[in-house]
Amino acid sequence: MTTAPVFFVSHGSPTFALEPGRLGPQLGKLGGQLSGVEAIAVISPHWQTRAVAVTTTARPDTIHDFGGFPRPLYELQYPAPGTLHFAAEAARLLAEAGLAVDVDSRRGLDHGAWVPLLHLLPDAGVPVFQVSMPWNLDTAGALRLGRALAPLREQGVMILASGSMTHNLYEIRQSGPEAAYVREFAQWNQNAVMAGDVEQLLAYRRLAPHAARAHPTDEHYLPLLVAMGAASDQERPRFIEGGISYSVLSMDSYVWGLPGD
Image 1 (cartoon, rainbow, N blue to C red):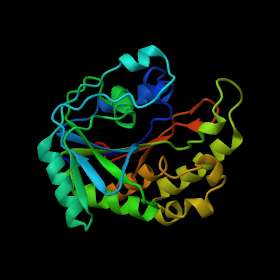
Image 2: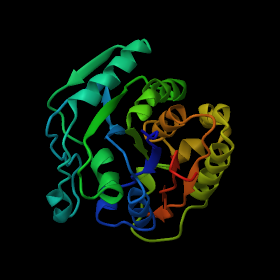
Image 3: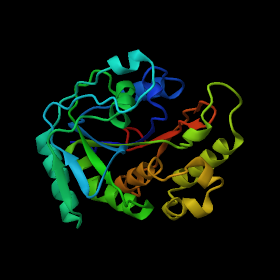
């Protein structure tokens, strides 16, 4: 069995489901290259819990966890099955890493999971489960979370860390020029990710330009560290240039471990 890949995908706004922009077609093309993926473990900032939790839902609902968007968005479904087997294996690995672990047998897939998966694997045929982000997670903890989940890849479980390269919702605009700080922040991260410089990423709040403006809170950035933790030091990431949505949402994304990389 080949080692399953790791993705960090910027899901930006829920409207990404209807407005694929530059990133959506690229995800679809990459999804067409995937083979041997037995299941997908999704880490999303839209599920935060006291302790880390894992979903064991057999048929997870599509959760429309947002308000005020166009009606067609609420009609979208992603009817992927769940997987008790791989969810239980994830819980075992997390406990083995010293984390207190809960299971949730009723929760569905939040939009941080199903929106990028609509583009990546639109047929919804691969089982999906989610792993939550603890409320007190920091960059070092996110890296440890990814490292704890990394052995799943050897069993054919793809890790999908879903966040956003920038996520200042206070500055979203329907039209207007792109904010310069967004590209500067995204470029700094691209340099660090491509160089495998984990130490810089761990200290992004102190080192990255415009970090507080790009991420008023950490939760949409932390999945990048989860992905870095789940990738091996020998894997070179592939950069996916996603463009900028609503003037301030960088959709830049990364994948490790694709065949041929």
